[in-house]
Length: 374
Length: 119
Image 1 (cartoon, each protein chain N blue to C red):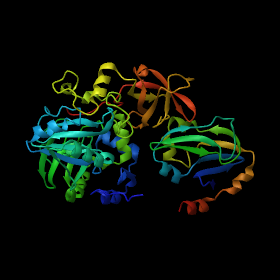
Image 2: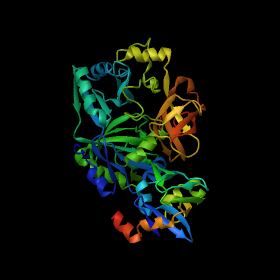
Image 3: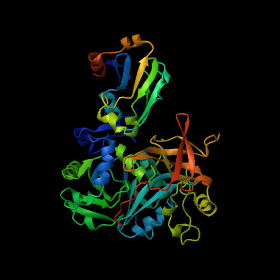
Image 4: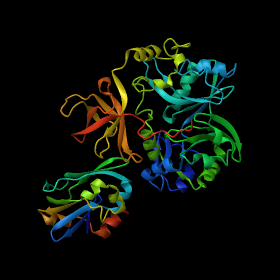
């Protein structure tokens, strides 16, 4: 097995007593002393600090400035980048010719260029995809920066003393701030359903910056275990699990991320890989959809659980892609794909757990209300 | 008290054996969120799966350490699985079994043996 890569915070995680695990080729903290359940609850109640340095940070430049980069990148994503405001961020995904999802990502208009954050496991492929697909652009991975996420209602009070002005940002605003820890690239976003920030900091300042945040009473270090249960409660997809090349954005319920201008009859309709498939599905519907699932009782229905339309049906109508116990909702929760005929909220279905059919209901997501500062 | 390599403990009180998981196992599993217990009256065989526990991380099976009949189960941990984390070797017990072959107990480790087993 290849040796795991470290982030600029790996030594700090070890010092803080993290249980470490291999994730997307990196040695990452699974949990700290609080444990997954309390880390999750602490993030919802106060603030959690996550190391997301394994993710890819990429700059896309074009000789003509932001407009040129945006126009070029629109050929790879079904997102309206041309009208994205300066210092604003948008969620999107790379698609393939079959309409499948190659990765999901965050895109920022930084005035004269685009800043892109992609998933760790996909970053090499994403960068190659952009280099090949954007021959007129300069695609450069940022390798000298760490990325931290500070999430939860107290995130603002912990970050504001370090990056004055971050408190007035709204959800999906971004900015570049000078601080005692050098230049910080901050976005008011995250992936927990909570208010909070993602902060890109120079690698050699990352540990000092993390320590300064952790010195705040409200901030605890949080591992990947709680990050997974937080994002699932928030109804957010994990790439490689809930979405991948075999799922389209329409099946995945992500059509909200395809702005009007890129849809059929829009000003810049289509023009991204798989547009015919995706726009066709938007017009004609899909055979299966991603839904939220609430099992009755306390047993979690995890990834791979087969879902049936009745207690004695022979053929499954779907399967679970993510499942866990939700510490905030104090109940098990899952998401997965089911036949389009079975997606209405409160539809009674059955999941097969350890050979037994257990009752589960289709539920709307998020499982917990989002707490964004819009 | 006796201990198995599967991190269960067995406490014999006048011919009825109480079974639970050790402090070490509870810590390794992390926060326990679901416990499924056998029914009272079930005849179990050594190494048969009798209990399912799920932590925030994963599902695990607990095996019957001895042959016998389940005579009592701890309903309190079904309603409140966190009791297993709080007191695995006390209030967090799983079930009581009346052994059909009490001699099987002799195969298991004592406390000193278990401590050296987990290092």
